Length: 288
Image (cartoon, rainbow, N blue to C red; front, top):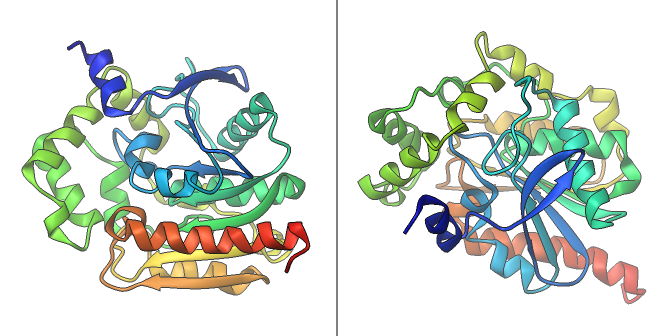
């Protein structure tokens, strides 16, 4: 089997659209009110790698749209290798526009949470409800874990160490997974674009993904903030701050959980998100 055929078989490749002028690999499943999933920023990451365990359950009740964000996965990499929050927000909006989605519920994981939050601030009418999971979006002193993620240099040992940092449950981390994620990180173009995104000093990238406090406090969206208590990548305090600043928020902290909430507690995560979004569906139907 060729590499490309293997990726299709594994589910990595969805459909291709052109969003904001860039070829974009996209997963589009289910029917109903759309929810857009924005993945995190680990080495070799794809939308499929982030969301594969929860997409089927979410898609049983709604339309799930999960793109590989600009420069990640199998989406196009800008020739100038210039990345920032606004460019990623424009790409996410381009996905919505290309699919004809006037408004979505938005779920952002880690880096993706900072993008989702910024999009909701810039275009509040395009977002119905907001889910932020282990999210950036506020400034905090960069953790050793995040610095190591963004500073990843490809090797099997480095990938194994990162996986140990991501997960609380070490049973999720084995040699096979480390090999798979390592191979993902060295696919053609993956590491080159990843290395261009977050060069040192890396505190500036935490700060650049943060939105101003007054803008966050100004949001009127219902928001669900989720975090793993043992997260070594994004500190729990970031979500406590978001929950404090977002005036219509609720907070859920998973115990015995690292940065991989949607993987370590996949069923609970999907149920929590579906219940939260179902409230909006019920209100829209006038039955609430």
